[in-house]
Image 1 (spheres, rainbow, N blue to C red):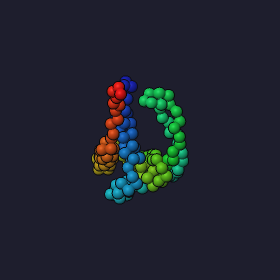
Image 2: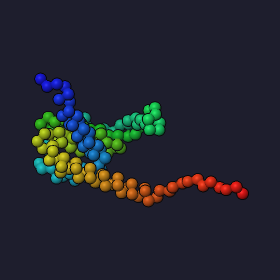
Image 3: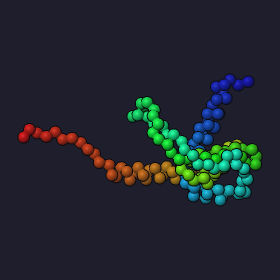
Image 4: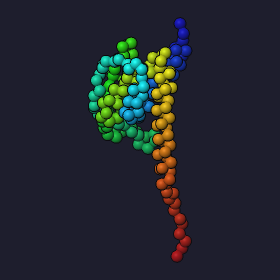
Length: 159
């Protein structure tokens, strides 16, 4: 029997990888996921465990960087859970009301968990989507930096 620390490391990697791809799936637009889904052959068969449904979630924030947490407000989100024919279960959680987006996120989550085809699917789908999201962030940062104004106070001499 292996010690718990030996078993924890692989689970941490799997959890981090899943967290990463679920973040990419949630931030990618429906059009990007539809295009990736259209390239899947054969099209995966699945059933709903929880059909796409719209609801609300509470958004929490912190005062300053490390202060007390407080409820900032509610936001709309959509969630979905699916099961593939092989029994793999996937979940999708996305901001907004786009049910198809949540369904595709759940479907890709289930597909990416397959130890045999998951790594290839990650390279073919998730990595390019993550690169596109990063490029969009860089472009927004460059546009924002171009409008930066430096304010300073000048000391006025005695009149």
